[in-house]
Length: 217
Ligand code: 3NM
Image 1 (cartoon, rainbow, N blue to C red):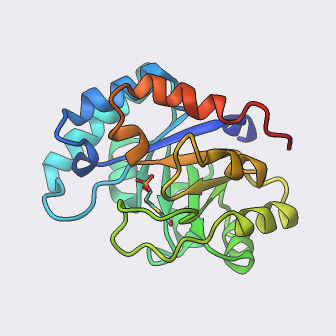
Image 2 (cartoon, helix red, strand yellow):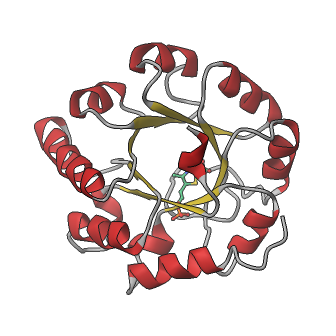
């Protein structure tokens, strides 16, 4: 599983609400063409797709990710992940218990967990998490209930304690402020707005990957 998290990973997260007025499938395809390493469908908030509309949209995302051979993960919704045969699921602390999710999805699917402390990291790893998300590193407008920006100290601590688990920084990350996230030892950056809102998504992905160069780990 670890080779799925080569540095520098650029993990794109998007729901239809994040497409900045563009066709979300076009945004996803641009990102896939541009070289994202992971994609997570995170359909949240007012106007979010539901029911059969959501299933159909998720299937289209899954098809695109399969075409570009990029793992397709779903935020929080185990039933949807199982229904569309997603490659994995990502959960937060307020979602289902991670051990329970692992039991439901089996060993093959990827499980990502958002954590905010060493203790939460330990619990997630014990329950079978394949990677962790830590944030918000910087201020974000993409998550209504985001905690206060925590910087990169927590990422460094978790990697210091659990060097084998891939950790993604999330929250307000741009190519300009990403070097601190790489410096902290993160395997990747998880990004909504700096990619979905970019005029040239492929160029922005290249900037993210270049931001890793020259960072001594
Ligand atoms: N989770 P942007 S911050 C989905 O702190 C999400 O766990 C966060 O979006 C956390 O790249 C966040 O636009 C939003 O800031 C990230």
